[in-house]
Length: 184
Length: 281
Image (tube, rainbow over all chains, first blue to last red):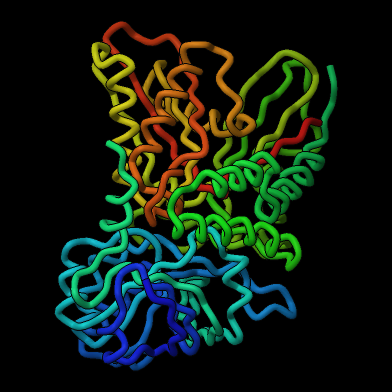
């Protein structure tokens, strides 16, 4: 299991080299989107209206932060459960989304779509929102401010820690690691 | 009779909301450190290291432990000698939540209408309040911010009475397995056994308030807790579902008499950031 320093958006050539279980120190730009924003993004795709950011190759982080205190870049900002976004994900992958960051397992449909579109699913540390906040250098709301914590934000991160959960060839962190420690 | 001004309740609730969201209980932190020693998986140990570090960062940087500052659940045990003055008790609790979540820069995660507009109420109200009347002239206010990820994985199972202890263990195992990493393990597992459907759910939630890992005072419950914990930690799910030997930190079971046709089992999963605190007025 390799250790990588990678820039986001993550180039397709690099995505193809990543293996489930690899650790990544991710730096660069990521966009946040949760349930409500996903619904709006997929509706925009279906209607053929422009998206609030160019999706191709980008990384989406399933996260809604706490409000920043004065002087803070962002509040606590850990991942939310990815499976709630499963229904929307294949459409976003088909439109060019390159990687996602969240927590927990994905559906069979999403795992298939990841292979088909050479995209990656990363997990980060659920419940470590304070720690993850220390890696965010810049945060700005770029769309749907009316959604509050569910608005889409553009984040610039430095050494944001993730683990490859599903790679482009069907490798699955959960399947492999859980099988290793299962005792019944 | 003793009079308590509801304004004191507002202040106490506001303080509890901020305290629980930024400082993890010592019992939890110790359990995470012990889990770190026992965890067999390197990825699992790394995850636990980060979670332990998160507790430090939250404290030093004045940040909430988790971005999900939860649905606000208030447990109010009221001594029957107490008389409330100065306003509406329910409103005073809601005001405490509003104040605590706003002044504490906590995330507001409550939407007003659950299945249509889902507009955020903007102040994390209304709280869920569980009242209980107890002897005496004091009140005990417990507060638990409950994260959506863990709550979503909770379950009520109306078992057949013949299912017995084995049926309970199997149902908890299946629930935890389905939850995988979604509920942010290592978990604290609350079980409410017996009573009726709605009461079992509240018992399971209240079981989570017990100091971590204290066995039930009922020897049969205590034995069940041990058996369930052993079984869960064989699942291999591990910290944050990334594989490992520590899937649960503790199991807390409460039981009550029930109808002879029933065996209600409520399973309330709590994440590793098992935030709760209480104060007595």
